[in-house]
Length: 323
Length: 244
Image (cartoon, rainbow over all chains, first blue to last red; front, side, top):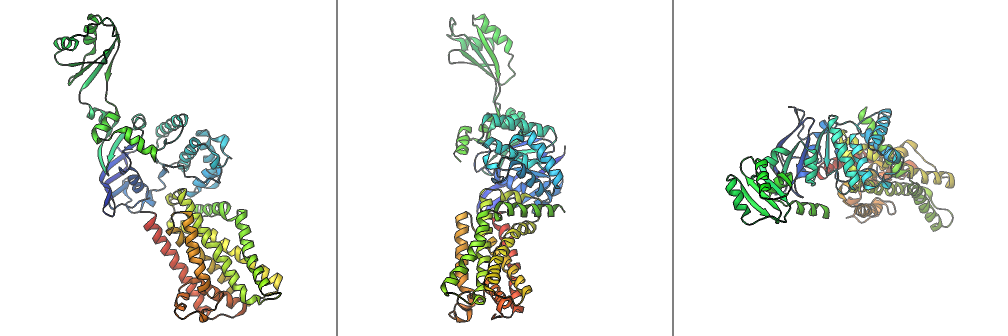
């Protein structure tokens, strides 16, 4: 396993306020690593320290095995940054913006022109290449901002809330592009408040709250850690069913499970052990039920996040959208 | 070479996006022209061009550079496009140089207009062209760096404009443009010698009419010293305030 980024006991204090407190994590080469947390959790401060926009109060930052703490300039050629706002130049065209960003990394004129044309094509912005950035839609601006971060073909791409505030079609397109970039070998460090985005995209996720890392694992690992019990829900046609004592009857037949009747048409079965659905469904059918659906309920990453951090996702989204 | 590509493109971008815009070019022409016209009207028909020439050149540079750089940098910081420059793999010194060169050139352009008008319309003479050139360049550099100093302090564009005015207007009176420093109240005179424009105006006076009060062997090194001091103070402040 190649660690491309390592944060070791990283802290950031603003006076007496500790924005990030002694966090350690690593990012593997070629993975999509997600940092999830509410506003004020320390996500942006962490990214800012990693990209050199904030000084560390304590700890080490290591890129590809080399300590760059206090001199991130050494690593800036390796990284591309997509800020949480589309921060290109309004008065310049899409094409000129990309060429200019290429020049900041020392790309010769021919190379940056070729690369800009390629990126405009990849991001389906070729037709808008000669339009000024200020005339772009929000989705187009976001795409061009991501393209600008890729102009020098960085090994690591930092993306701060890449899909916030844009239309659904652009969100889908950007998510697909992130997957494609990663498949092509770019390591991606992502922050998002869309938990389903992290669930879909990230290989590993770190939950961050109040400046500290709560947990880091794969999505499956985090979900597994949040699982209290195995849950199966059986949905049946409610008419012509004797629901009286149903829970007790099932308990007698399957003593290792707990059964709960829910909404008059669903049986929720819980167990600490693996649940074999077939005999339960068979038994319910024998009771004369018409079974519509039987499914194993897994906790989501959202459930894991709420359980581990105690933060409600809806609150987190509302806060973010207010901003 | 890679740093030079970045440097050159930042400079070209600033020239195209800010300094070569028609409103700024017209400002560079109208501002000194208006001052000369005002002097001309005030004096009836003929006025002593040699006495006002250095002042108008200095003001054209001062007004052109300080606000332009402070406003453009504050504007880019507000739009967060300045972050792109800070994230580029070039040294902060190189980045600052690329940002200030445009404003310095703009300051030099602003000074050419009154020189042109004075020489071709009023028949003014220049005693020492190399010293005039040195004075104009150093005054442009020091005024631009003052603009950078202001930009590091301001968070909003209007703040940058306000601070620029707070900086420039007292300087006009302190630097001996209208009243020679020796005729200012005694308690104000030390302040005059603490502002770089005083030395710049004196160098221009020497180059045009040799009516300087300080030796240019003092004024030129002092101006150069102010440039170095403001450059490194600004670098220090950027590191302290923008990379927190």
